[in-house]
Length: 90
Image (cartoon, rainbow, N blue to C red):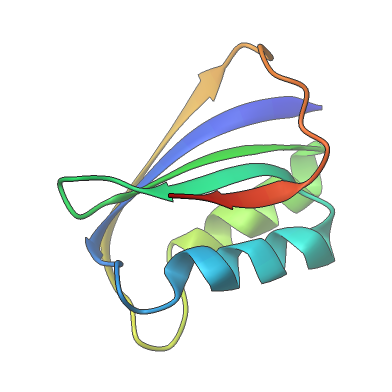
């Protein structure tokens, strides 16, 4: 199990990116959170097993139908928080 910090840039706010990310995370068994950022990006923390986590990251590179993803940055982060589910933050 590992935790990834994922920053998604492009036209990713106002296109149900966070809601669809939660749906995908729930299907894949990924825990964590998604939050819109002031700069127009979406910040995601994703926690899970390697294979489903990679599938989730691959999904983030496409996003939902209305999104135009320009870049996805993925970094490893220490497991500092216990996630119980995947949640959408403000």
